[in-house]
Length: 157
Image (cartoon, rainbow, N blue to C red; front, side, top):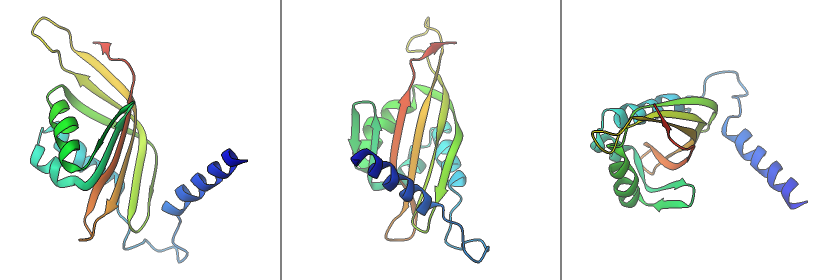
């Protein structure tokens, strides 16, 4: 019974994020989550740590497998800066998204080139699943609040 309740609650939460405007007009408070994600991906591929930091919420959370980082400083240091130089050409392929007045999300798959650790090692190809959750902060700015990545083993290119 608890699992059914959890599924219903999760479905209601997702539906509330993307409920249509009853008047049929565009919601003036709605955000284009694809635009937010493209800003993030563009900054990542440009290796622009200043812009990446500006997009992170103060209380951002990162999850990948058993790895968890909390807060802007830890996520920036242990994920962004630690990983930025190891991958290139990050791409997102969306399977679902939703927006509301203060929250937006996108989920799907990602692919990236994995750079060799040494000069005589091959390049790799990484892929997996992602969820990026954005929230408005107290200043009405959209910030990346939650990142979840589940990567498959890297393949030699």
